[in-house]
Image 1: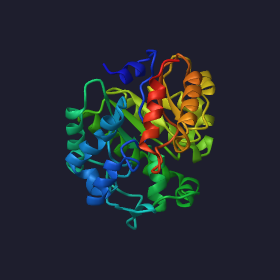
Image 2: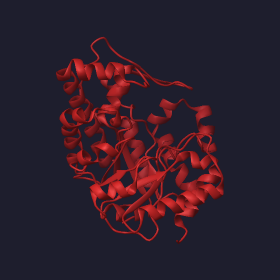
Image 3: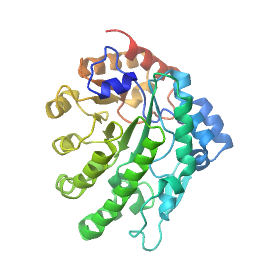
Image 4: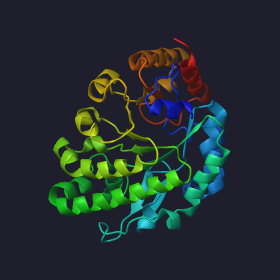
Length: 333
């Protein structure tokens, strides 16, 4: 049993486990060195590179968990979509003419390198560390898919929601099926915990989240939770807590603005929470980092807590500043 799995079972740890979203990424010099030699998508499919990159922050920072190196959009080409990542632009998705009609994912056949990377990572993971798998939430993936990339207003996705609700539900269901299959394949390949990154879930109207989205999420979480703990994370989700409470999730990831007190009101004191240091604090000073870590530990209190950021590590983050945060988390008091 690892410290993180202990906390996810509702046990209170004197020192919370700590890991950072996007910890295996651009702020690490060894990652940047790899990226100079290998395109991003190549790294996401090469088993050896997946394992090497996933383990980088464990070796460098001694975090308590390794999150699988991949991307929430990684399976889109297997569904018939184009996918490339352009520097400074993010994902660019090529949509076929009938983009709302696509097959379900078969991870064991279509993502062999990805799953072998998971197996190699688990085999090399130091004792006492936890391996986290992940996938995007169906609405978040649909947001990228419909727009052909990143968006601020999700015009195409929301036009589908409001104008063609039956088609919207069909696409959401099909993406949900693929997300579940991908999570289950990761669990079978060594993931000890899975996290659903639903970054843009907070852009859905409350009524539509409840009517259309909650049932899809419930099916995914209920099935995935049979094998491992499930963490759910998104931005601006506080208004949705009464709905999220209906999901059989194991833990909730809090974004930067979220309040531990409010989450405890809805989910209870024994429910594990994860978060929520502002990533920009890591660009400030060691003193600022230490003060914020103390504040968050105090807000989390003695209840089950996994220390993390309120969003992903920013690329300019000094590695030493991240190490300062981890030391502060582990410091008594």
